[in-house]
Structures are given as structure tokens and as C-alpha cells.
Amino acid sequence: MAEIRLPRLPDRTPVKVQISLPADLHQSLQDYAAHYEATYAVKEPLSELIPFMLEAFLSSDRSFSRNTRK
Image (cartoon, rainbow, N blue to C red; front, side, top):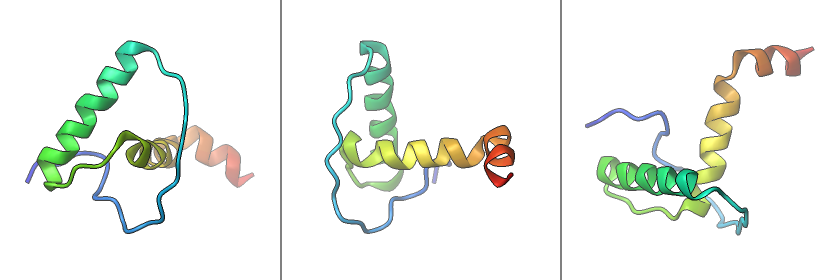
């Protein structure tokens, strides 16, 4: 199985999210969602993936982690 940064999403209650994105970022997110589906054989809408992607990004930012622990 291919390894990607975002693990398979846990069971959760759906949450609606509405944001405006530049077209190239939207395309990249769609490409990532396709890669996620190919990896886990589960199609997830972007509105479900984005919160987990943001959480993964924030938890991997060492400078942010250091500053939030203070």
C-alpha cells in the first residue's frame, strides 16, 4: 500500500465547511482526494478531508507546536 501523510479517516459526524480557494489549490486538493481514494479504496469529499489535512499540517509544524506549549 502506498504511504501518504494523511491516515485513513476515523468514523465521525459529518461537518459542513465552506471556504473559497484559488483554482490551482482546489485542483491540488482534488488530486489529493483522488490519491487518498486510490490508497484506501474509500472516496471522501474534500469537506471531510480538509479538516484532517489541516490537523496533520498543524501537528507537524514544530515551530507552532513549540509556541503552543508555552
